[in-house]
Amino acid sequence: MPPRSPLPPRHGLSAAWLRTPDPDSTRPDATPWRTMAQWLHHRLPEHVDVDAMLAEGRFVAEDGSPVRPEDPFRPRLFVFFHRDLREEPEVPGTIHVVHRDDRLVVVDKPPFLSSIPRGRHVMQSVVVRLRAELGLPELSPLHRLDRVTSGLLMLATEQRWRGPYQTAFERRAMEKTYWALAPVRPELDFPMTVRNHLRKERGQWQVQVVPGAPVNAETLIELESELDGHGVYRLSPRTGQTHQLRMHLNGLGIPIVNDPLYPVVREVDVDDFSAPLQLLAGELRFIDPVDGTEREFRSVRRLPLTLD
Image 1 (cartoon, rainbow, N blue to C red):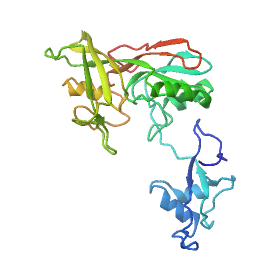
Image 2 (cartoon, rainbow, N blue to C red):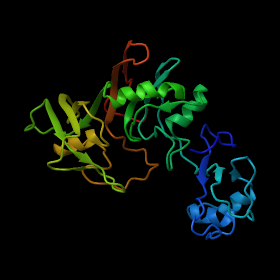
Image 3 (cartoon, one colour):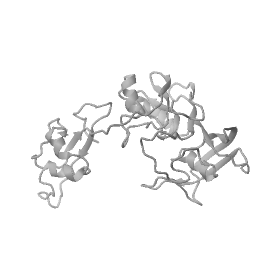
């Protein structure tokens, strides 16, 4: 683990860090990098303007001193810096705070808003926006919710509360219910439970069903009603695999409306907000692991989902 960062957070985000490698024990005087600048060029992607960042003093060592272009390469050195951020268009829609107390914040997020700062979505993420708006610098999500999925996301107000709630999610003590808008196939008999083994390979967009492998994904699917020629499906997952709900409906031949990945991957610009995925994380129920109280939260959104 790195030492404490000498740089303060920026936009609610801690500084990134790198560590120079250990010296070669067989050749302690041998290194392919003569200067720290050479190592940073080697270590960071080509689109990062290392020379400009060095000139501006934006790389600092663990003691807070700036890393200079001519500094000799040093092994086992932690280097801290803040990444450049792209200009992100504002994601439409409101983050509804449906509950807040000393330990938890539960929000109802719109589609296209990332839960955490990641990749090309940093400022336009629930964590970064709410850390500033609510004055909670340690605010962090307790479970996953895809960027294109709408609905309930639960966050811890401080790091000290993460443990008990994350453990509850891992033990499947949190009961979650989703609703989805998808085609109707009269030959399908609901309710039904889909069970299979899902696996996502690194670098692949879609998850795959692995025939014959032990079940790791299970969803109860119920058809509640019809709306504008589509079915409104109630989804009760018993497990939490990546893209589980999207894949289970797709596997039945009823892919969720506006899904950019299933049944086929569609080229959609990351800043195209015109067609929200019709999947809503609608309810969350559990026994609070800290004080034993019953908790239940509901989304304020309804299908069909719009950009409100």
